[in-house]
Image 1 (spheres, rainbow, N blue to C red):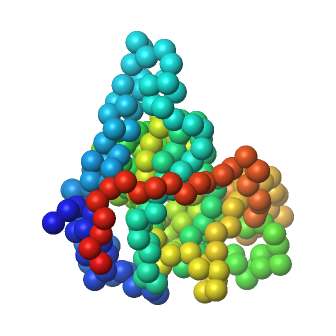
Image 2 (tube, rainbow, N blue to C red):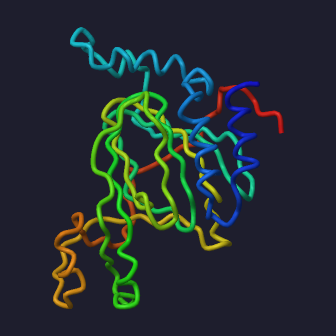
Length: 240
């Protein structure tokens, strides 16, 4: 069985439309992602080989070697009401801005390259106090680089860094599984955010000084230059 087919089969029996997954379901998906999925399994071996020489001091024209534009591309593999599978191919220095996955569990597997990840979770017990405000406090979950090969990053609806951003240090590819997928009809639409400066006169966060760093986030439209284009998936087809 092809690896991507095995991943599909595991997702089909493990993932559900309600976004809340058992630890066993999460472990089943992570096991396939961590142990089996490689760039060659999804038609990206040529790109992965190019990235291996990206930081070589003898490579003077890296863009020429990688044959890459500056456009972020998304290769769609599969989607149903319970989950979707796709790959983001991100050129070096390009950014997927801070965004959320409301009510969704997300599995992200870095296939090749190095990416900087910054992620946050909302401070949930302040929601009622701040429900009329356009800004909300969030705690930092992750702020650092990931390099392939590595395990999968799992994001739950309310923890693990549901609001996150990616910045490509080298060209990189990230395989994403969303459970359930985005759906505006079901209230799962993607919102973008930015950090903002805000005082805390109410003292909401004053008793949290010993916890991880907190920031204020506000909803914000990404720049017009941020574009994700659909690209052709070139890996093995799924047997549905």
